[in-house]
Amino acid sequence: MPEIKTIDSVRKGRIRQRIIRFESEPGFTISEETYLRFGLSTGQELNESEQHEIVTEDGVAIARGAAIRLLNTRMRSRAELYQRLLKKDFQADTVERVLDGLTGAGLVNDERFARAWVNDRLRLRPSGLILLRRELKKRGIAESIIAQILSEHNEDDEIERAWLLLSRRRAQFEGLDYQTSRRRMSGYLARRGFNGHTMYTVVSRLLDDMKE
Image 1 (cartoon, rainbow, N blue to C red):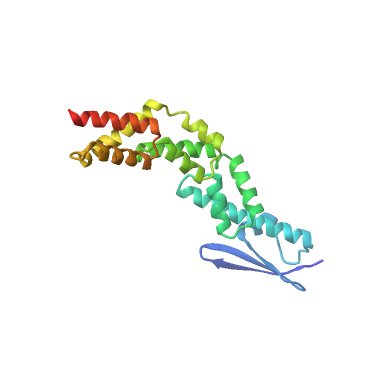
Image 2: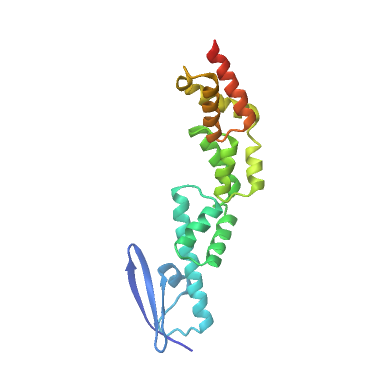
């Protein structure tokens, strides 16, 4: 059975690592965390299965650290974290295992993410629910969660948001003919993700106001 010949300590940036070498076969490099966790020492014998477990667990620990650093910058959906970790060259099964653990610990929660995303968008850059739905789907949120979150915002709120947005731009439509004003108002609200009923209601209201 292979026996650990040497254990060298090295630094990669701010991260301390251990290089495990054997007498008769290639060794491996692991994080300090994994080295301490498994209590490795020179003279210790490790079969192939044990070596594989250590390397696998090290990959999970490193991926978990990367995920937590991403979460420390801002809240993210599970799908966003999955894609970011794959781009960092972690294996898919390792990423799934890490995300399962973070989900179980409450650090990854798509419902909480979706609710915070919608509330922040409505507060900082009001938009229609159609646009918010597209944004949430793009971030990998399940349709059942999207439906639940968006159902918390009623039609009256949607119309009020559209009215506030459009009325702030009223000066841009002054002096235009009726058809041009309607087309441009509707186009603006459509780009902001409002539905047809809301657009018709708000555009008609503002056009009536401009007649007075």
